[in-house]
Amino acid sequence: MDLSKGVADKDLVARLSAGDEAALSSLMARHERRLYGIAYGYLRNSEDALEVVQDAFVKLFQQAGRLDARAEVGAWLTRVAINAAIDRYRQRKRRGVHEIEVEDEHLQDVPARHAPGALDNLHTEESRRAIEIGLQALNERQRAVVTLRHFADLSLDEIASTLGVRLGTVKSSLNRALARMKTVMGDVRA
Amino acid sequence: MNFPHFLHRRRLGLLAAGVLDSPEKARVAEHAAACASCRTELTALETVSALLQADAAIDRSLPISSEALQTRVFARLRSNPKPAPTAPAFGFAAALSAAALVGLGMLAGILATRLMTPAERPAGHVASGGAPGLERFADTAINDAAFYERLEKTQLRANAARYLTDAQDILVQVRAAADCPDSPRDSVDVTREAQTSRRLLRRRAALVSGSGETLLAARGVMEEVEGMLQQVAELPQCTKRSDVDAIARRVESRNLLMKIDMVAQELAAP
Image 1 (cartoon, rainbow over the protein chains, first blue to last red):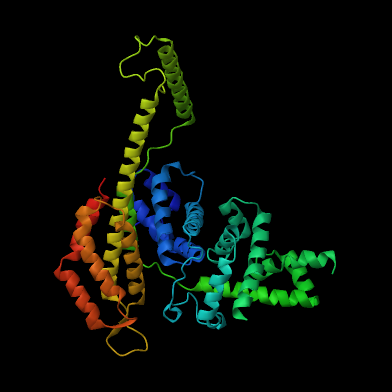
Image 2 (cartoon, rainbow over the protein chains, first blue to last red):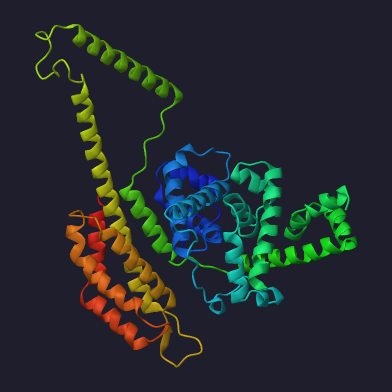
């Protein structure tokens, strides 16, 4: 049972910086799923995404004492996770894995967060493959912007702050990313 | 095609992604309604955006339990303890000053040695014609090499510990595999476990190659684990529950989970 219910993230970080491991467990329980969604959205590989989540929490423990007391730990973790995902993706490309190995998911076994509707029906195996290919056609920044917009539901301002770029850059990256995906996915689905 | 057309066309992706504020959204939507090519483009972009949203809405759970994730994170922290707090700016300046003093001292030493006659030079110093100070650099290089070798070994052991822990997760999870849909009764879906086992076997191959003697103590358990992972990796998507139970019994009869715990702890120990 999580005894930290009702305790603010900031208080947990303060306890963590004093070496309280239970505080890390509570923070993990709160943020692990969201971070995994972001990492998976970027990397499209569950094993790599899990590594990113682990890295983020190890880093949180190690740097808790240095976190700005005013900073939101959720935003900080998002930044760490997306940067770790970008690094991991880059490493794989450097090692000669030009395309991240895409996993076979059995979508019929995966429950959707919302009630089944037209959108769920849209999401066939074919469309999922098209998305993978569309994402592979993007550069790192475009991929990160798309991930943070669609998989973390961040606003453009939040994306700009997370990636440390200007708002205009986020807008143009998102616009170009969707246009590029449209072209590539259109070719695949044609 | 006029300037507003190009301006609005560059906003179609943002409109499709639902991130434009109200006044701009209205302007771009109004233009798209009146412009056939923009309307077509917008429809296509909206499809991409909808597909992304549908993909993001899939509830992808972590492939391991929260408890297993916590175990792994704490294991990593134990093998890689909290770094010392960063030195304040004053400390950095002091370190720089110290380094400068050491550098000056070394320079003075070299100059003094050069000014000495061969007879005055300390024993072991490189004779004239040799490169002064090379031995010291060689010593440093040897120390560095030893340091990196130790670091590499520690990293290798930590990776092996993580591999064993991941393998342990799979050997536990395979026992709890869910029923196979649309298939004969008493069969379970082990797709994920089989895929992960294949990946783990690849990781093992990478770990073992070139590990020398570093993983010698773990070799016995690693071989046993390899054998079990191979059995899981070869299971068909829908497997008879009795086959999975048989693997679980073999794991149990060898006390493999406990052995993994012990060896992983040993490997992760500093």
